[in-house]
Length: 179
Image 1 (tube, rainbow, N blue to C red):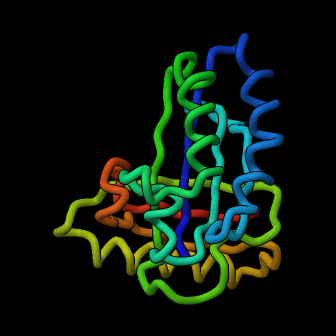
Image 2: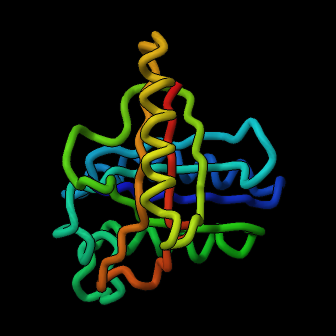
């Protein structure tokens, strides 16, 4: 399972255009084989106002969903990106698209059904990576073990795939906490 993470800040006068597009876009996109789910969020804290998260079943779908070779791309994903580029990107002050995977690349879906999410992005450097994973893992176990039944936490790392090098995923780690 992989997670496509899209963060956007758009001119306030174009909020309605973005929202109208997203209301149709998410169901259309998740109808494409390879996308398992899609959800979008509005920030309650400073930073990019909008976040959309899409679960991708596995790496074999990357060329058809996000690949740089458009001849291999699914027709619907191409049309969605074309509209995005034409109608929305010119009005964005921030747009970042990242691709992440769980370090073990196994397990249940990344997203659950929780309506609230905390996304913490981290660059820690190769030297401290294992120590940081251990500390984050211990903190996540403590949070979940403290009786927070509706809470889940997943640590994801940048997913590098030759067909989607254009993404340039950064930062290296993404901690998702669903509340």
